[in-house]
Length: 387
Image (tube, rainbow, N blue to C red; front, side, top):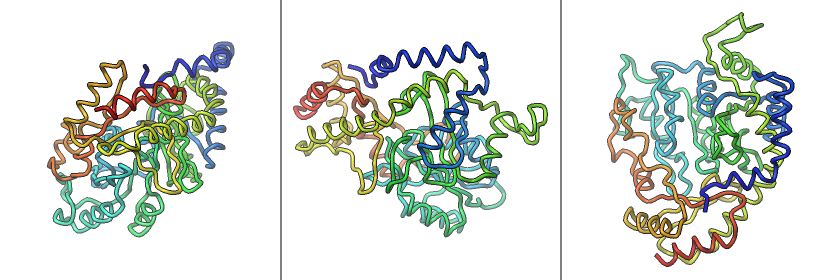
């Protein structure tokens, strides 16, 4: 059994994939070819935003977004410790400081109440109000922005987050790397913040056959900046460099692949709902595990279907039993960011974010993709319920 079955999807669109790739080979525009603009236009329309700016990865999308706001040393950027490192990594790369905020125990997304406490703690330079990172700068940190993460495909609580941001004059960058196709009160993920960023890593709900990413925004000036910065700070032409930028372009071949895969995407979002609903129904009577929680008005795109075991021992027992049956599982994420070696200089303590730490000890994810068969799901549920 596959954890993510990309082969089943490929079989459905193999002819279109080959046709699109051959078009690129025929026209030979391997850098910023017409497929790149076509993909941007299609995804902007799907998301409901004015501008979509493709780039080389979800990480570069986040980096470009922060660069558009001039983030740098002395700036505090608030985000979750329960996510992949890229979210906080781009903050550190620009010399700014990630300020971690614990998560809601039901959604696994950033907790708005704790976010308010963290902002107050930074403004007052008072770690008694909320755990703060070590500050290596001569002056206190300046709150600048928030990066909520739409974890496992479920959007964060943007109404509350944006109200907090407005109160404290902060920008919001949506990390929708796992959530393209999700919805929040009728609005698509990718349209929920000042800038939104997604990833086209192969395992994502809309993934390529390599790396890729995209930024979404309604801001004309923000879009112009990101278009420039992704190609070495380009001005009127590639030899007119008006700022220091990056080499962040999306390959034309990847755009061609994504255009083919996007033809199936709305249907696959629906299929993902059905797979998730079957899981939750099959596991509903199991009182020893916690199935995913979806708040009213939210639509997850189910990048992962994740369960909480009672404790680490039960998780290991379930994973072991599933492995004996040839069923793969994964743990997202076994080690929160505040205890990663890469962020040791922030001097956070293991107990600073207890909800994140607890989830890291108990969470595990089951096979999840649009083509997962009902019989396979029953087999998975039978093993879990038996344990």
